[in-house]
Amino acid sequence: MKSIVFSLTFLSLFTLVACEGEDPVPEENTRPKTVAEYNKVTEGLIDYYPRDEYFAVGAAIEPASLDKPGEVALMKRHFNSLTAENVMKWSTLQPTEGNFNFGPADRIVDFAQANGMLVFGHTLCWHNQVPAWVFKDGEATASKELVLQRLQTHITTVMTHFKGKIYGWDVVNEAIDDGSATYKNNIWYQICGADYIYKAFETARVADPAAKLFYNDYSATNATKREKIYNLLVDLKGRGLVDGMGLQGHWNIEAPSNALITAAFDRYKSVDIELRISEMDVSIYPSDSDPESEYTSDISLKQSAAFGRYFSLFRSYRNDISGVTLWGMADNHTWLDNFPVAGRKNYPLLFDVNLVPKQAYFTVINF
Ligand code: G3I
Image (tube, rainbow, N blue to C red; front, side, top):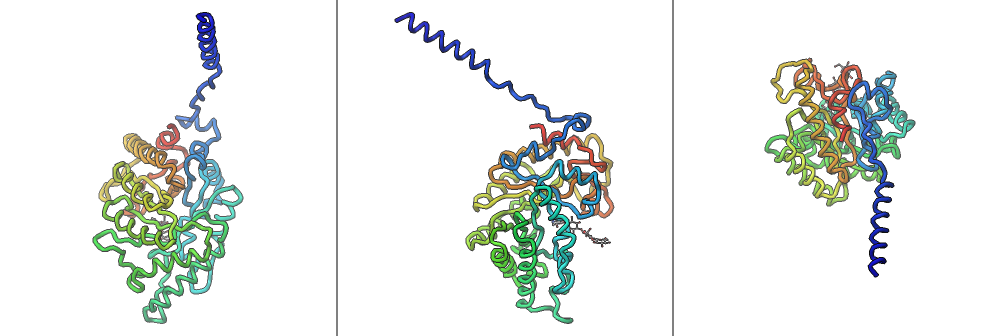
């Protein structure tokens, strides 16, 4: 009996040792940590964040980038989702009534399709970059009925044109007020009240039932604004009109805090909708009044830590987040060079003005 026990013990010990020997050697982390190492490999963000495991990684682009080989290479290496930074907005798509101009947007969609990338539609209804004619009837202000009818025509024509080619649309952009009011008192609201929001989503749902419909806004982590957005999402969800929330993510090297971000993620996901970080950049200026600065090593360290902090949160919410889109590809082209201070150079992205990865990039991919 003793010898059987001994043999069995010996056998299991042997098996254990043998199995241990067969364990796969832990994969060596070959992810680059320096520009020299980056130049020796071909992988990019989409390899370190595979879409099926994490989320789509996107960038907002202008069609002009498609004519620049360096930017095309950067795009293909790092991004699997594209958003038109401007050319899917009303002022480009329908500058005058009934005259649709799909050329510039089609270039982006064609490029994305040829390269197996998703396209995110931005944006069907916004108070900026919408032509004045939409709200005019001759010299007079147009009636609510006329404005809503134009909204319906625009959304139906645009979504029909791109049908089957767009993952999701920012149907309404930035409709919630930053102050004490519920809705932003924009031209849409002044003429239509909140009905323009419902009209936009209802029309979009009919125009392309397969497209995901998003509400998109900035300062979406602000606690007061968050609750107003949440109420709108609950209302829209109850009507079967919304599938996702886009948090723009125009953040900076200090804010928002992890607590605010997670509170916002938790609140929006409780509506049972997808989350997207739709327009991410990380300004080097925490305050509007900060003077212009070079991209110093101190700023590089702070920005790298901030990007690392934000992406770490994204990874922990990867089951809820379907996409993270940066608002631009590299620091050579960013709207923040002219906002909130015209001409104050900013450096808010993962690649520098020469398309070379910054420390923030290495932090984001080494986890
Ligand atoms: O197209 C004209 C060009 O013909 C003209 O010569 C030139 C002179 O200034 O202006 C060009 O238009 C500019 C347009 O971008 C295209 O480059 C506008 O002046 C400029 O104001 C506009 O800025 C865009 C901004 O939206 C408008 O509000 C930014 O590129 C774009 O990044 C920004 O994106 C928005 C999102 O759609 C919504 N969330 C906020 C985000 C940042 O503002």
